[in-house]
Image (tube, rainbow, N blue to C red):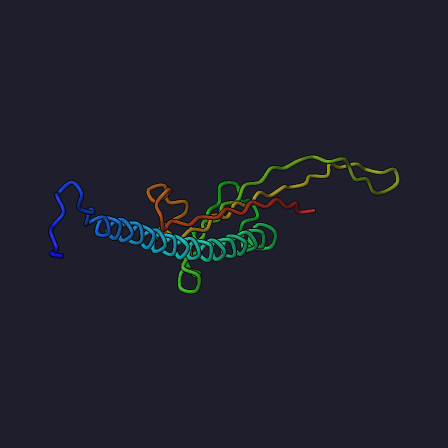
Length: 162
């Protein structure tokens, strides 16, 4: 028996394997791109977490420095006093802007002597605001807020002189 070609309508279809292979390649390349993007996003997120921790440490240090200046240092009347600390730029990559305000309150009276002489007891309440960021000049940096590499942390504390 001699082999005879089948009519075109009866022939099995060819080329389906090529289409399936192309589809698998496209799906695998999209999956690879998604995994690469996920790795990049995790790396950026991790770096921002580290910078955030550094900024929090810098803000805490700035608040402590401000409290010292208000209670024991040169800011005894600190209304509106402000200073930018740049010493942490080398170690932490952060600068800190510290501001101080205070309010005075009369809280009771104290008396001494016989008969007692009463005088008002005045208490100062200091509010220290320390803002740490990775800006070049001062914190907060309104031009960089919302950018991908900008980190800012704020620490506010209150203390009284009594």
